[in-house]
Length: 313
Image 1 (cartoon, helix red, strand yellow):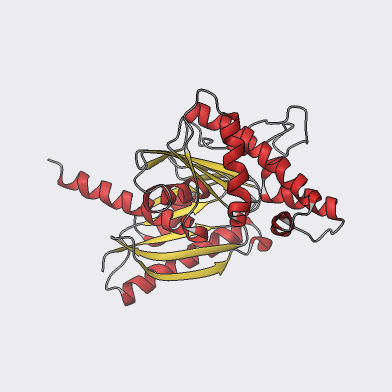
Image 2 (cartoon, rainbow, N blue to C red):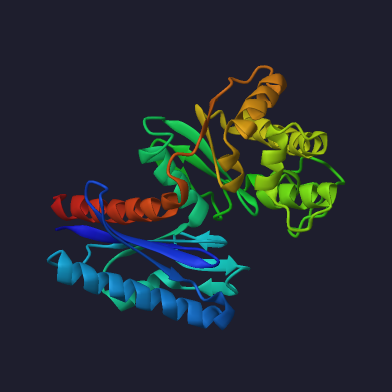
């Protein structure tokens, strides 16, 4: 059965699959990233995992994978196939596409994890059938993916979609990027967790606990939550003013709060728009499988492009 390898590399764990031409997940596997062993060991783990996936496909599906798609965090040069920088993994200028290609002997596509997840949401998830969308992941930080006619824009230097570093509170909380008042310092799951832990006096409290307290009417939780929603709405309105998406897809850990997030967020965005066209604001549909599914799409795009090139006179 014709298939590709899909691999989603995270800071702590890796998700992988063998994906059929129709998007069916023919085999799934997970493995620890092992970042505590250092950046070179992480690369070796990825190569070994990819080789195991190739062997599984050869043995169980009748032949080797046609291509591989790999999604990684940090700054990614997708054109050159280089993982330029990833703080969590200690990477700098790792030629990951070349290394995996040499290990597997097949074409390899390398993508940014959030853009790759956004690609999946746009094609087969919450944005399916939408020509223009913006995917925003609210996790430890905040990142986005700009969807255009079935693809995701990487930008001239691989930085497109970094909505978390839109300054929404000038002169506000310092951000590790060097600016002050970045969106992710106010509206990420990590920022909400930090604010709620301080407000309730429990250092172990997190954003999910804050959301629960909001539903029970805790005024301190409502204040912390609304502060995050207002900052997020400010950042999103800036983004939709620039990009004019038809659909705004919100994913990541904070989105798991459901309507506790989406009801006030839709209201806050609606209050801020003037001439802009209000997009549909919807939750992401694919959960933590988005990155792996997107990596599979990257691989199939590579296969289909090669097939078209080979038949072109």
